[in-house]
Image (cartoon, rainbow, N blue to C red):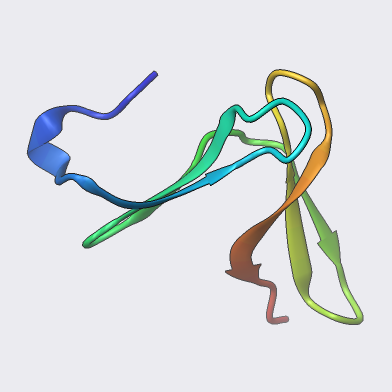
Amino acid sequence: MDAPASSGTATALQRCPACRDKVVVERDTEVVVHNAILRIDRPSGRVTAKCRRCKAWVEVPLKFVG
């Protein structure tokens, strides 16, 4: 489901390398990850999201601190 046009136009788009589905949409004021399943590697803080279509793990522009 895409956000309404009032939230701004997409400035960058990150797609799943396996199926080319949209995973991350970066706008001027927000970053939308089109999935709620995230995996965090605690030692490195690296965050990946599961593609909603093919279930592949895709690195997203987030860093876990904690």
